[in-house]
Length: 392
Ligand SMILES: Cc1cc2nc3c(=O)[nH]c(=O)nc-3n(C[C@H](O)[C@H](O)[C@H](O)COP(=O)(O)O)c2cc1C
Image 1 (tube, rainbow, N blue to C red):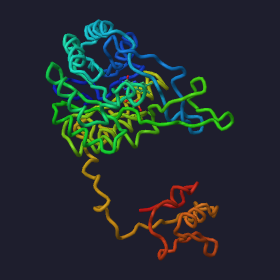
Image 2: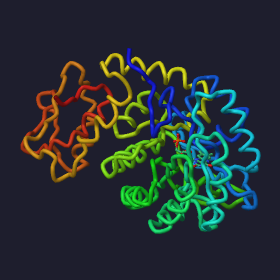
Image 3: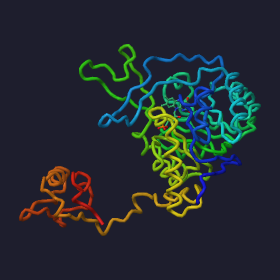
Image 4: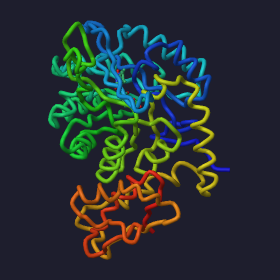
């Protein structure tokens, strides 16, 4: 049987599933419950100096739905409102009760050496296993010059990472923002500045929409709104891309996250370069209990694949990601048709005609592909409602 256990920077993880820094890790009692249910660790809701002013707007969330299923949030929540003492006492309590669980202290401070180092020194004296530097919250904090303002600026990211590394007595992960042109560049810079690991992604800055009856924003705070952080299934392709780019640029451990809802999502993040994964939105939608099927599913998958553990799956997809220039151009892959399944609804014909290529038509009542015109784009198989078009 394969093992879900893994070791990152000398820290033992019972399994690769951690709670991300967010509402599910904002209270000690609830983290306690999550540990009982099987999560291997928690990144605490971001801790800040006690004198950092933060006042929350209400409401804080809106959602994107697909057939009533929520596929993502836009949130404008800020950071932890608990004192540093609350967290120091809480970390001690949790570690005493759950010595095998991993606790990562997420932190953020104004861009001031003393403020960052004081926070780190205080938390050094707790049994937390590591730090995660939140350089990536996209709302509220950038207005104060912190959060994503740090993670979108290479120089400031380097500066703060070095300040923290000067005093940290635990491994330091840097949590990066997807809201940059090149996340790998920031990853490389913080690695050079001494980061021990990377975490990605924080939320993707977005604007969920407008109610067309009232012309008010969907995230409506007394008639106004602000850009917020998007998370959940809808951001998964962005998170996977960022993790793969970081892995191509760096060998540091990566805590991958962004839209992980199932064990399959987690397995893909690991194959794309993550050492472990973090989950937030799916827990906020379905509770800590989702860990049960995630553990079982990943375990079965590793067993069935004959992988000894997480490390055997890690990076498996990374070398397959190349530049467009290096992709095969010829021969083209033409669609094939299962004539027994095809009901000649002509949806594919319309799409092919109106998306440029005009390669599909009915000939003697049967769907046929004109290989002179077909460019092998493969779109038709996705619009067929019956799965009658496929490629080999
Ligand atoms: C309501 C909410 C609050 C969050 N608060 C924090 C935070 O305090 N610190 C942090 O580093 N990330 C925070 N995040 C980002 C999550 O940790 C995570 O990186 C992001 O949501 C992507 O993962 P997901 O798609 O599983 O939610 C928050 C996310 C949400 C939805």
